[in-house]
Length: 302
Image 1 (cartoon, rainbow, N blue to C red):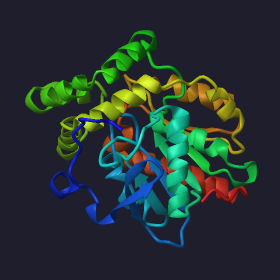
Image 2 (image 1 turned 180 degrees about the vertical axis):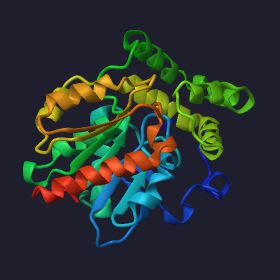
Image 3 (image 1 turned 90 degrees about the horizontal axis):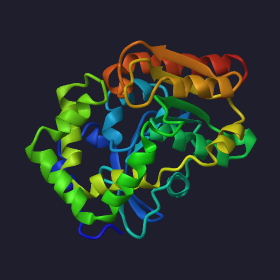
Image 4 (image 1 turned 30 degrees about the vertical axis):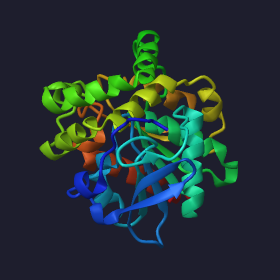
């Protein structure tokens, strides 16, 4: 566990959380999970995975749109947002995959579609690849981090050093709450998100537990063997990207589309890294159109 870390308090920090009525807390594996569930029980099931440093709040605009006809499950990833560890954690890609699999088993859910943003898109592919080919869910990646990030040779060791020092997260959280640091980080995404979203990100950054979770995920992130997960996909992915994303180049999605025959790629000229937050209509239309097209072609995607 992350001793000494401070965590968000649902009774205080969650009072105005987006879609609070859809939230529930579930013990599964090494975590007490924050999960939001919306939509008809009779529809297909969509699992939504946010990226590093975010939380389920990043789907706040998409959930009402996607849940009109489909069951949506949005989670806070391990050690992110309101999901707290109960034991030792493994924040690597395989570790995240195992943890989410344990949660899905606890819920008794097999998703038909997994939608992931940034690093969440890589987790979505790893989760799908674990299933038998006839039961694999459809994967949707939004600005997917499918390749090593720029400057990884410098950044990954730095993240490891910061994660190893528990005081780093505490200092970062203090700075995020008292300086423009949080706003500067949001500007780096290139996305003009709304004031509510910006305030929620700043709230996340004031939690040293959340910050340590993000640092731990970045420190453990290793895509060695990821191509084997891609090769194991039985269904071509649906890929959505913003051409002006300064954090994860759209070329990541283009390259994966070339790697996966039949993959569908939707590009937005603008939107930045948080495309799904500032242009949810474009993203939901791209998802719905691609899923409906797959169904009409005889693939039971949703």
